[in-house]
Amino acid sequence: MKIEAIDLFYVALPDITRTADGTQDSLVVRVRTDNGLEGWGECDASPLVSMTAYVMPMSHSNIINIREALIGETIDSPEDVVRLRARAGEFGLDIQQLDHAVAGADIAMWDVLGKHVGEPVWRLIGHKASYKKLPYASVLFGDNPAETRAIATSIAERKFRAAKFGWGPMGRGSLGDDIALVQAARDGLGQDAKLMVDAGIIWGDDVDAAYERAVAFADLGVVWLEEPLRTEEVGAYKALSDRVRADGVQIGIAGGEGADFYRSADDMMTNAGLDFVQIDVGRIGGITEAKRVADRAHELGIQYVNHTFKSHLSVAASIHVFAGIEEFDLIEYPAGDSPLVLGLTAPTGIFRDSEGFVQASDKPGLGVEVNLGAIHEYQRHVKIEIDGEVLFESAQP
Image (cartoon, rainbow, N blue to C red; front, side, top):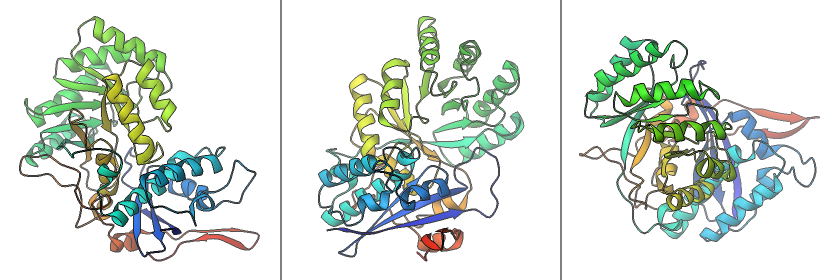
């Protein structure tokens, strides 16, 4: 089959706030083929910036848009998807947003290929089985301990067995303030639930500040301290990880969501001393690149965990990446109230079973379908025009 069209849909809530919440808008990508099939993907980046990578005029041989790289190409096997992902990278070699943008098309190509051959994506990318994963409810800290405890209590009432709290006021006050936030989360969740903390790169390259929190949070049974430092501060990460291990502090160091291409992720895995590497399939260039990272993490003995703070379309794409590696047993599961989280794929989704686990579907492709009604409701109209020539205009889904 051949790729006949690549459609772009910018969806957004009516009001966007500065809250560190990636579920407020999205770029959804549809790949259509000449045999009538459709595949869907989602990018985790600024929708408008990513859209331009699909439609902008050529600057020279290394800046050619994604549509030109992919439309008209044949896609009948996993090797074709890998080839086309590489082709888009070659055409857009000097496009800085390329990996974020092409992620949507890569995911959509795996989805449409799975539908074409009647196989789930996890099998197409080489896994022999699909193992259950424990979802952790991924939420933001409240503005204070009382709000945080209320959020944690609601998560416990929803029967989640694990949760991660991030961003908000974490790191913006004293050590005591941060401990109070995490204590509130622990109190609301209960002692048996897994608790993780995402610091949102708040301490930059300050190893001492991160280490103080690691020690304090370990006493509260926190599984990992995520992104305490900026992604590029690989040396600082290594110093922190070494110090935590040398002192016997019982907490993992996690990072990697800021790695937006394979070599960045590999650098963190080999040189930063991570215990957990967290990769966003919608940032690193899609399923193709995320699977490379998961394989490398398995080789190095580092636990791969997805980073996903978008819709269940992204959750579905993410779980296929590491479905067949049993020891990679945790999955980030956005648990906020944005209507785009579940709405983009309702009524399908990656749902918890009676024991609280989730699992990649055996259905062809990603195993979820996009809700066209949600796209119609939340779609923003975009028109990109140069000298009277329309390069792109939003269409109905």
